[in-house]
Length: 126
Image 1 (spheres, rainbow, N blue to C red):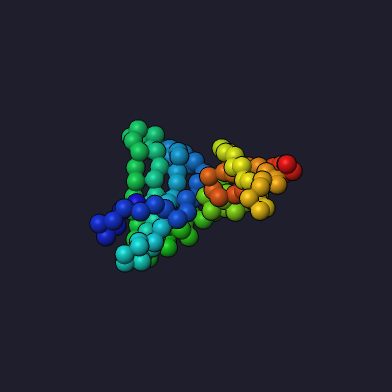
Image 2: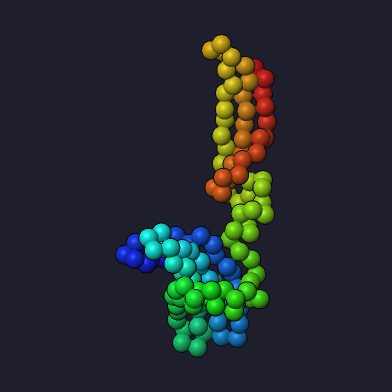
């Protein structure tokens, strides 16, 4: 998103139901880091014109858009992040060594995802 000559990412994304001729509807929500205005970006694909459309709304307009489309929400990105406490989606592993007096006494293996969730998979005593 862009405002006040700066580029920043959305704080939340709302995925909306498809309507008659509009598909892939999303609302990106953010606050400008410089002026702190509320910003909403409505994006969708229009089947009639066969084009992808983006519309920006600021301050009061952003609040009205949020209220107007609240009933069409399928899911939200923030809801997805907080819904899954355990790692989900793409995962990677982290191996940690536990040392005591300079000697390795145990290994811990963690599964992590890119949302910051981490879960202990296995602890190996050496």
